[in-house]
Image 1 (cartoon, rainbow, N blue to C red):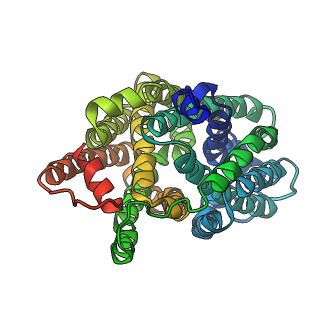
Image 2: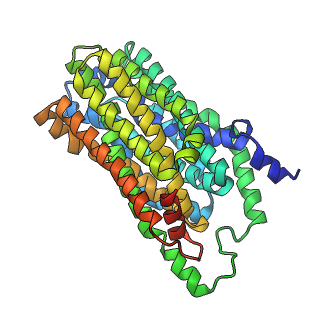
Image 3: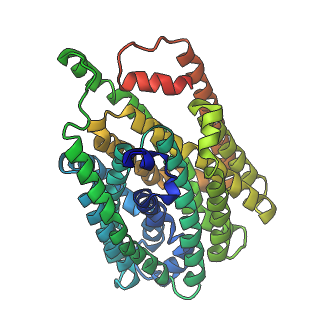
Length: 426
C-alpha cells in the first residue's frame, strides 16, 4: 500500500497532522468562553472604572471584533503565502496575547489584549480550515469535521470547567489558560512540512485539470461567491443566537439566584460534553441523513433546547436545555464547514475560510447588541422561546432547500455551484 493511501485510510485519531489540527481548533472556544465564569467577579473587581459593566461583558466577544476585521485579509494571505507558517505564528501570538489579561493593570489594557487575541485567532482559524481542505478529502474530511467538534467540546469542557474552579480564587487566573496553546507549536511543525511537500508535488494546487476551456474555468471561478456568501450569512445568524449561552448564561443564573461561576461551568459543561459525544457520531449521522437533513435536525434540537430553558430557571430545565443546544450545535457547526470547503475552489480555500470565519465571529459581535436589549425588555424566557422558534424556521428552511435542490438539474460541468446543489440534494 502506498504511503498516501495508508494516510487516507488511517484514522484521524492516529494521524499526527490531524491531531495537531484538531487541537488547534480548540482555540476557537478558548478565545471567548473560557473567561465566562469569571465575568461577574471581574465586573466587581473593576467596578470603580467607568463603563465597567459594559466592558466586562464585551470582553467575551471582543476577540470576535478583530476576527471580523482581520479574517478576510488573513484568508488572502493564507492563499498567497501558504497555510502552515501563518498557522504557527497565529498560535504563538494567541498564547501571548490571551494570557496577558492575568497581569495587565486595568480594563482598557485587558480589552486591547483581547482585540489582539482576535487577530491571532483570525490567522489561526483561517489557516487551519484551509489546511483541512488541502490535506483531507471526502469521508476523511467529514470524519475530521466531526472530530473537530469533539476536540472543541471536550477541550471547552476542560477550559471552562478549569476556569470556573480558578475563578473562585481570582478572576484573573482564567487568563493563564490561554498560555497552554504554546505547547502546540512542536506538534504543528510536521503539518508545515506536510503542506510544503504537498505543494512541491502539486505546484498547481487548486488549478483545474479537467481540460475545460479558459472561458469555462473563468465562469466556474465566479460561481463560488454566492454560495459562500449564503453560507456565511447562515453561519452568522446561527452563532448570533447560539452565543446567548456563553455571553448571557452567567447573568441568567445570577438572576435565578445561583452561583454564577460554578453554575456557568456546569451549564456550559453540559453543553460541551453533550456536543462532544454527538460529534463522535457526526460522520455516521451525516451519511445517513444527508447534509440538508443534518442541518434540519441540528436546528430543531437547538430550538427545543432554548425552549426548555424558557420553561423554568431551575436545574431540572437548565441542564437538559444546555445539553440539547450542545447536541444541535454539534450537528450544525461541522455541516457549515463541510459546505464551505466543498463550495470553495482549492485555490480559494483560504479566502472562503476567511469569509466563513468572519461570519462566525460577526455573529458573536452582534449577539449582545441585538439580544441584550431584547433580554432587558422581554426577559430571558420570552427571548429563549423566540430563539427556539427561529431555529425551528431554519430547520424548515433546510428541508425546503433540499426539496428545491432535488428538482434542479445538476450542471454537467464541475464547479462550486454543482457542489452546492449536490450537497443540498443529499
